Length: 254
Image (cartoon, rainbow, N blue to C red):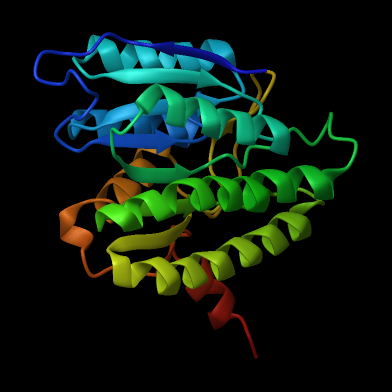
């Protein structure tokens, strides 16, 4: 199901071309995605807020507007490939020729308790969705000679963590392939692994796991940097936010 809402154009932004153009943020109904959407709006981007939670999408959109920014809300269950394709078409139709300069693939929140097939859910959200969104928007960025894509996949401290790590590995590989494919055309593609962090889950639940950023805002600042001109030479990178976890594990090896 798709449900879109948009705010009226601001003066000087009649065609949706803000100072930074448009940014599409998947999974922006809360947590890291919301924090990213708010920061990109602060930087002058008009933001397409995507997420499965319609109320959360509307709240993020409203927060952006209250701060003087412009946003379009798109409530869509990105776990369904058919819905993702519909969402891509709807975004394209609403934006017209306005440029999408930033794409943040952050649709990896999984409700394990209700998932009938965890593997399919994990790979749909963390691999298929980025594949579809990048396939839709990266060529448009490349045609304009500029753009930035950030893929985000957090670990989950559950018995199904291995499946998430497998999805992470697939998305990291895609990130590096896309950086080679689109980098020469001015599109930077990078990956952020925020580790295990406090984040809202579907149904309003929150879980905290060790070995990651404590605040979604910390992850958002890293993503904000990666899409900025200051990161012009950061391409195909994998940025981890695990604190000293990796060093600690290495130090314990015989």
